[in-house]
Image (cartoon, rainbow, N blue to C red; front, top):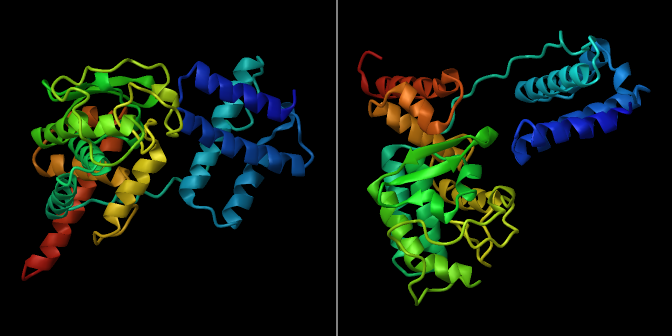
Length: 333
């Protein structure tokens, strides 16, 4: 069978049967289409003609091109998953990528915002929201919830009105693999959400972004609105969905790119190195929880990590912060 046809079937399998997110499927598609193009350049167009030697050459060429170890590791994992599926679906005992190896991705410490910096950022957003502008109220609620609940950006933009319980201070999140979990948030995030739901969201739903003059969605229950059908497929922010929690300027569900632009613009003004997107707030929340004495298992559950090892990176962050403080403060450091 043609390699490109098998790749399409594999991607449909990942989406329909494994429940992988659209973002994850796109990553697989990028890697495997690149592999198909490389194989075609070597005269290989059929899945049955894939070999360990060709796969190794594919990774070696990428290494020579200067691709990062994390990218090489991802490509290797994509190839192994694909050929394992080929062996099962075609009832073939041959799996050319079974012995494929790649460099382990280097683990870099995530960017973490200090307590003082986060307080200053949230105070700035609260001051902007006091002007009554709908987008300012929405932006404050977004950042407060990201930091309070350590959500992934895809989880945030996928939220619907019924997912938020303002009485119990919890949010129902659909994470990776369509797994649901209930995550708490604090009183400051509750206040920001009440302010946003009380007036600003109504203004945005009407397709305007000026000062709201009427009270709309209830700010006390978080269960108002309808349970739309497109919330998990509208992360690009193009679909109009009356049930979406966070809306864009024209009343559509806010997309991932919009949240990235918002957070990046805010973090650009804060000293520090590393990525300046919404994940920095997730990293920050997890690190601050551990700094405050939270149990590692509880943080794992909050973040929705399958492996405790993934969560343990934040213990390294705390240790590095401690070492940095020691080096600056101790006279015998």
